[in-house]
Amino acid sequence: MGRMRMEEQWWKGELAADIHQTLRMKELKLPVYKAHSPQIGMRRYFTDLLTVLSSRCNLCPTARHLAVYLLDLFMDHYDITVKQLHVISIACLLLASKFEEKEDRVPKLEQLNNLAYMCNVNVVLNKKDLLKMELLLLENFNWNLCLPTPAHYIDYYLFASIGEKDLHNGWPITSLTKVKAFMEKYAYYFLDFSVQDYAFLNFRPSLIAAACVCASRICMQISPSWTTQLQLLTCYSWEHLAQCIEMMLIYYENDVKEASKVKKQVTLQQQVVGSVNHQTTTQVLFQQSSYHPLAQHSTALSQFQAPVQDLCSAYRDSLQAHRPSSLLSGSASTSLHSYSVLQASLQPSVQTLPIQGPITMQVAIATEPRHCISMAYGSSYFSGHHTYTARCFDR
Image 1 (spheres, rainbow, N blue to C red):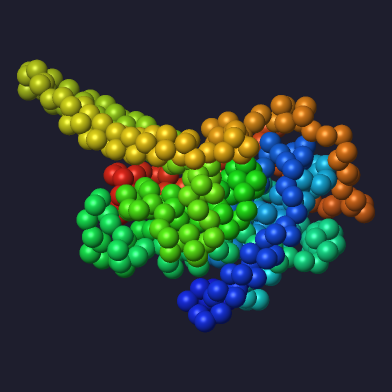
Image 2 (image 1 turned 135 degrees about the vertical axis):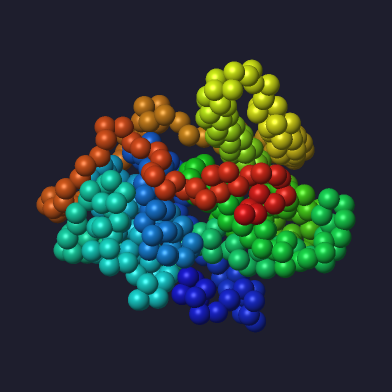
């Protein structure tokens, strides 16, 4: 699918509907994820690691999401040591890139070793051990890597995400091209969120992709939030998407709060530096300062926080009304459990990873799992782009 993305935009072609239907059929046969891995507490670390490596190698989103999905399914069936997990995660990335990318874009072993060292993982692999791990993974998946992920659907749904009759803040859209560009960034933003938390694995990949589009329309204040055309295209109604959208909006609201907090800290630091410089000047001039820089930013910060929080709160309240009681009761804020609690609730029937002989490598890792690498997932969106609601991706 990634190879087709490089050569042509399949979602615009005559076979788009057939390809989408084939993906939906394969989606019904995906393995059930049970979250039984004893190492599930380290999942976020290895997800971030795969994200950094795939970004450095310029891999397409489908390859990145497939690599994480392969790792999730493999960890769910075996009790794997931390040393083996590093090798398995890199092997999953290689298999996914070979399946989704062109041959000349598949990362080389030397490149992966160098990138792993740059990420402070210090994993040194040789070709023989990596090939053994790739064969073990292929045998585990019965040599079938055609496993749809949300990234396989997102472009097809984005192509019809904005219509000519849609309204923005109650007004007609004047530039469909510009709005679609913002919509794509928002959708991939939510798509990145979905891969960070294993709670999203309880939803079908196509439903997650549809929820990304709907959540993007909500955040961009495009009405209606879910159109008849999108419902016919995705085969999902608002009731089907309600719980997944609610989780995404909670993540979005927390992200905006965190961005506001970071922005406020930077502002205060700048004020302290400015205050020290100003005091030095007043000491020379023997004058008392009447400059209050904080007052200049308090109004802007309150305007920044209120619209998004009110918007997310209002939609969360409306989503609660459509939320069936049979669905999962957990939210994004409670879905990441501690490692000790998860380990206590695991079933004892966990298989041991059948690896012949030790793997030759050197691993340097801290005692506790690191949940944030220097290039965190979606960091380009977390670093202060949320200046206002509808166009938080403007530079």
